[in-house]
Image (tube, rainbow, N blue to C red; front, side):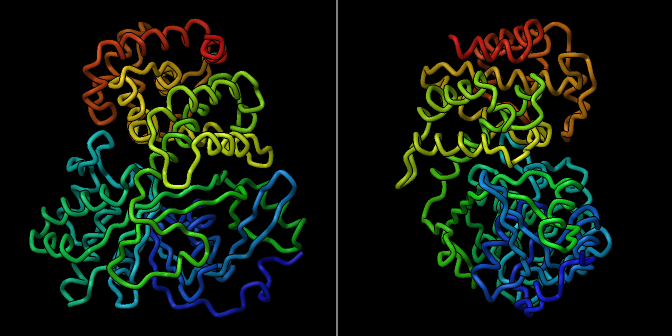
Length: 472
């Protein structure tokens, strides 16, 4: 076996970096970076905003890595050589600003997760009390993703360079508008003239991204080595399916995305609503309920016929009625395709992994659908049960009393809100203005339904409540 990726696999010269990507996690390396590599003539400088782990694993490999497709019929490796360098922001924030402000940088893309934008998910506004934002207001060397965007754009403005296009690739509704708003608000607090320039000349296209990317395990590394004959310390795993829909609004050059299957459109909104609510909304629902029921992965959860029927009911009765189909899309066929993707046994997407950061994810994945459904007079009992399951999960104890490792920026507050009385717990959670929109916080009927769902979870358990929904 060879100690690293063989030179023959990545000896072609990498194109000069025209893209800087903030948040070089597994998802972007299995999705956006693959598209950029296929488009050709563009390189990427990756940036880790937190730790050096990804950089340290990739550097000995010359920044090359394997993207391994996990299909029901087998595995297909692809070596990706589009990365030019990887920087670690906490080690040298000025170096990150310099590469973002370089004349050859035309696009800055991001996958920093919902919480990385330092905003309030229920309103989309900048959270001015966020510790990183307070730091970035007082210091020229930033910590947050919005801070790096604003300070790098300030350097370009001062140098007489045009702005770069900010390409958000995270699961936020109207993500381009949200990031533009956060960046604009932070820029106004630092320099109103800079904010005016960004608004007049910048571009923040909305996007929709879709590919299931489970966490890579040590067993994956060993299996890949046995199959290929070389050792890759930084591979990514992904399903065969992929989709990227991008608003065609850039303020400078961009890769030829349309040549490699990216859907360049005038309006991403119907695509992102379809994906956020049909995929991410049911993914989260299955994650919380499935985890509480003892299922480790989504595929395992879908192999339980009760959960498979439950998720089909969510699509049919609660989610699809609240959606406008994107051009050329059949929502029923999309649901069928999602069910097949979820059931793919080769994808070990852990329910615990999907359950992370629920306070940041639920507003766009589930709560918007509930609010619209209730306003239209439609019943949404399945999604309400999913919210109750999130609350039960966030208590930090599972149905057997074992500790749950809750990963969420609000985790201590959520745990402190838990009471043995379901009604009191619901009152405390609904008071979270950064999570629940006013339409739900002030809806006594929703509070009653949520209390009933949480009572059932505490009394009968998650699987029994799912059975009850399927049989209803």
